Length: 113
Image 1 (cartoon, rainbow, N blue to C red):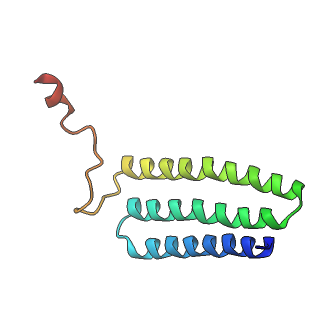
Image 2 (tube, rainbow, N blue to C red):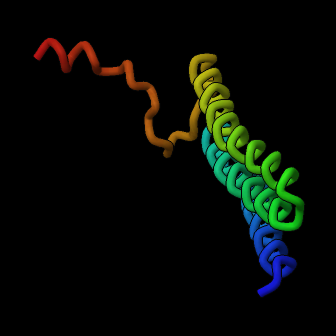
Image 3 (cartoon, helix red, strand yellow):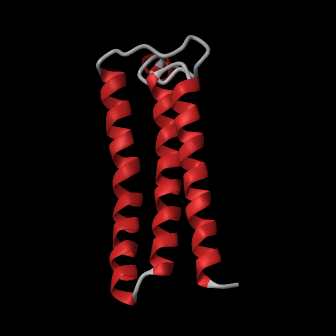
């Protein structure tokens, strides 16, 4: 299999995950689930596209793209966590059917027993 086909496969897979992330952004009801969908899909989609581009490039270009992938895999989930935590602390409500993320409730009762 030639590098062009392998590269195209990675790039198309990355575009697919970006499209799934956009569908999650439009479909899910609150900021927390939207953030989860877009973060996971964007991280994987961008990683796959950059891997596909690294296959096409020279060794110097591939090394730079691998560094970008590593930074993206570190920064994207971290930024999503910060956004979700800031949303939670600022009081942005969740959907009622969501898992309760308020972990401070009930802690006094657990330690008193």
